[in-house]
Image (cartoon, rainbow, N blue to C red):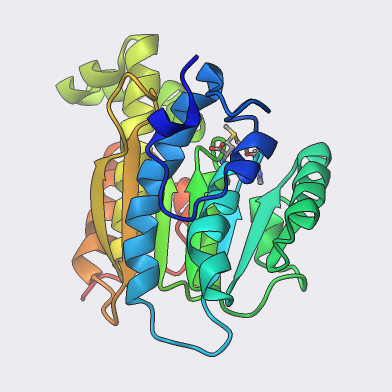
Length: 282
Ligand SMILES: C[S@@+](CC[C@H](N)C(=O)[O-])C[C@H]1O[C@@H](n2cnc3c(N)ncnc32)[C@H](O)[C@@H]1O
């Protein structure tokens, strides 16, 4: 074990918080199991900080909702490094596991992180919950399971989020659809070789899911960049999708999305996953 100095902490960063999150032991040593998590979250913080700085000033400060918050490493780090020193803004953690919600509430209280709320809600239900404000500036979802990332996107659209920061996790929905229509696709196009083997079906499903999400965001008025979160040695789920609101919905992205759904036999997903897509030009 190495000590806290090796973590390259930021000025003012709370070692008390890192101990509470079990990233540091009580003696201030690094817990190696948590080191990877801290590295991911710190790296992600750098992207989010840039987005927060760009937000228009408001007296109550920025609002941020983190979906599939888990132990809320990301939320706590964001609060400690950005929201706490500024004395404004609010972070909402959305999580389906009641014990994690309770644990985060207790920790926030112990640390005096008053402008953090932890809600026992699914990402899908969060958009309609009265516990959240009408508008949220930033939506994050770090490894939120399966379709929770899609629910976070739907939430962001409804809350007119200025930006969304998504690191998708495992995705099963599209792969399941690909599996169902595989025989038909194999007869129709040689490209279906790309997802003939079960492992490739899963990988292709995952890749396609994120491609469709990016097109959807563009079609709904966001500028999207896709990049790597950290090196593969730190996480297998490594794709970072950053979306910034623009005033422009891209009709061409909607057309591409629909064309891809048709090509892969996934049209049934449009109504549930991609509602409100701009209509094609006639
Ligand atoms: C892999 S963990 C990631 C936790 C945290 N974001 C992180 O990166 O440390 C995924 C979390 O999402 C939660 N989750 C799964 N489905 C969800 C949903 N539909 N809505 C909200 N939370 C969900 C799980 O309970 C779990 O805590």
